[in-house]
Length: 466
Ligand code: FAD
Ligand code: NAI
Image (tube, rainbow, N blue to C red):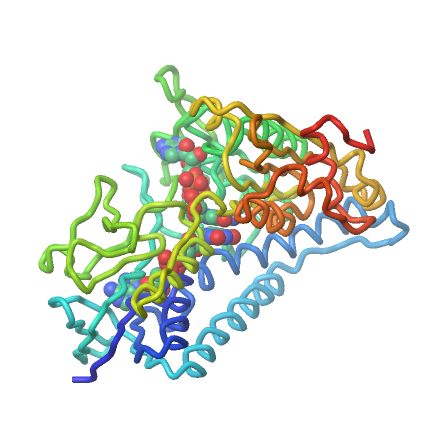
């Protein structure tokens, strides 16, 4: 039986990054993946294909609405097949990249479903009925998550789709009904609206993007409504009638009341994701789960069974690729005797709509609930020179700083390129910067990032361009 210092189960962003870091640190490492390609949800059916379609559809919309204003005479025509091929090409390039990284770092890759049969032993069941046993000094579970389902609404990935089906629709639906105004609902809703669908989003709660800063949530809703997205808030879908040529969706107020029927060609179910642990043999080995079905781990990612560790979407915390990656690095370093660590206060959260929405650190609601006094610096993109010239003046940047120490506690952005600018906010929080540190840092002109500096200056009421 081949023997390893470490066997990682799952090669999503958590698993493959963990394996690479472990190999760098001298651990003899193997990975097991049940998909034909590496990269997990993120590269195959998540971050990468969704961002490809967001990019292409945004350019399509700009060509339709903005190019003329810049003197570019273009009348774009959609070729959906080619757009899908463009997306596939992006996915292929990325998954091949992971395969290359595994080889480069001399990591053995096994394809098949892994089951833990005891501490130190993993059995891999291949697609052709073959099995292979692996001995491992340590096992890291990085099996990720899967789509959450709604009772009574069966996803067939044709007319009632999850994000996976919504990334590969063969035609632009005339009417798309999205259940859930979370990240997937708004991103993929944006893609299909830009390509020509009428998009209605039904959300259980009374606002979009639960968990984000209240001011950001309200601004995001307003901007998306202005683009034509229709929101039915405080509402739930209780049934979808698939018997006719068009879907008949029953929508009810969340708190109960009269239902009405909305017709749609496609329904996208986007009500969250749940940890994926099927077939791993967790109960048999005695690995404990928490109350939400996630693998319970301590601060060092150790499960309840010695020698078995877990990271990424399958444990608590935000279901984000970069969170999984950082946990992968941390656990590899811990296994190699180093002090691996993730700062959960500095994890950026980005929604890739247009404008983008990005957040790092605490929201105003969280600070108020914790009784922490804070100052607010705000800067609207209408006052940023580059945004003006680019015609991307929607949105604002807001910085929350401790009233006593001036330390940056939260940064919230609704603006073009917010995702890239969130890196500066994460760095500030990671380094314990004060708002004044950001305000005194020279930012290149003309860039959108000057709005970060101006918002930081705003904390001390000394914004220049307002
Ligand atoms: P996964 O990526 O889910 O990987 C787990 C892997 O384990 C899978 O490949 C699976 O096949 C394998 N596996 C499971 N069980 C076994 C087994 N028993 N044996 C062998 N292999 C097994 N996050 C972001 O940060 N930014 C984004 O823009 C973003 N966009 C997204 C868009 C969509 C549509 C979706 C669905 C998700 C998106 N996410 C995004 C979330 C991101 O994809 C996840 O947070 C991330 O993939 C989690 O990484 P992971 O390594 O924990 O798990
Ligand atoms: P989500 O948790 O972001 O949003 C789900 C939404 O559905 C919530 O607003 C919730 O209130 C609503 N909801 C739940 N039940 C409902 C019901 N019965 N009827 C109506 N609404 C209901 O989950 P989503 O969008 O499915 O995404 C899953 C996860 O994937 C995200 O939490 C995120 O971690 C990750 N992701 C990250 C992205 C990014 O970083 N840009 C992009 C896409 C996904």
